[in-house]
Amino acid sequence: MTSFIVEHQCPRCGGPAELQESDRLFRCGYCRAGSCLSVPDYFRYVLPNKAPSGKELIYFPYWRFKGMLFFCVPGQIKNNFVDVSQQAIASPHFPFSLGFRSQTQKLRLAGGDCQGLFLEPRAGKADLLERLNANLSVRLPQPILLNAQIGETYSLLYAPFYLENRLMDAVLNEPTQSGTAEQIEPLLSQARDPSWPITFIPTLCPQCGWDLEGENDALALTCPNCASVWMAKGRRLERLQVVHQPGWRPGTVFLPFWRIEADIGGLTLNSYADLVRVANLPRVVQPGWEDLPFYFWTPAFKAQPQRFLSIATQVTTCQPREEIAAGLPQGTAHGINMPVEEALESLGLILAFSVKPRPRMEAVIGNLRVTLRRFLLVYLPFEEGPHELIHTGMNLAVSKNLLSHAKNL
Ligand SMILES: [Zn+2]
Ligand SMILES: [Zn+2]
Image 1: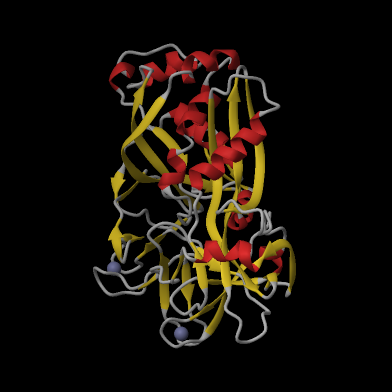
Image 2 (image 1 turned 60 degrees about the vertical axis):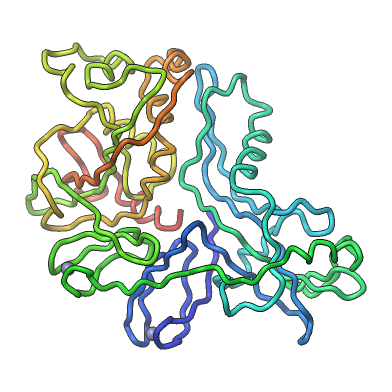
């Protein structure tokens, strides 16, 4: 899988740094100050340019999308890995995609220190996904019962151009295939300043002032002093409520999961007994199961998309219901790097995967409407083996390799 490098400057001392595309936490190698990168919508980057000095740069927007698209069709679940960039303004004069440019160049965050004419996107994320889904579903059996995307990266890349007699590509410093100055000029009236807000939130515990801990791609930071957990929201850190399933012994590693309560339209799925019936699990409904509430469970850590879904399906069909205790568990806990918003997109797929036999899937997900009610972060205890982390109660093994490779997803 590809990802790109972002050149960055420490917001406190100006020291240079390089970030991975997925990094959300930055710790300066010079002054040691830590900060969380936070944007209200999505990250915007600029590609470097080799334009002659004095040329006014025109920045043209491209959507970048990387992830796995899943399609539920009668009796089957299909998937396609996609890694694309596509024009965010339909124009015959600019290259249709960035090709490999974004992977061979070092990018920068687009912000107030950039100079040039930045063109506003006219197509949004929904348009991009619609086009990708339409292209990929042509050869699939119909109808498409459900589609969803998992493990996605979604950002806006601005590529530099400039005008001589014709449109010049400023990354390569050579003319583009088409585009005269007269054709390009009408677009320029809609340019804007690159004054998008990026907030660098200091990684200090809002409750006790201690330095918060987290991996570079962490979405939540933990305080080793007061055992609180924090997430960037807008311009500040907000406390995240966490619980854990007790069960610590030497060698225990806790993995974080989102436990999601949703309103499910088009299907009766309120209790564990409902799940046994809907998914046709090989179990006989026991007294009391009608009263056990149903939750979706997904990893709160990144994993390769098919594995992410199989883990989510297994935990959801097990419905862990051991006692839970408030707060962080003691001992080793894996970082949180899967946002709950992205986990929400997988709920229909989790149901599709849990239904046996697969031809019954159509009846279950045909009219499905899932909306979030509330969620909770739950750490579950796993025993560390030589290659895997194992939850014996659920008979679930998570490969350690999977967790370390998932950092680049
Ligand atoms: Zn610094
Ligand atoms: Zn604290």
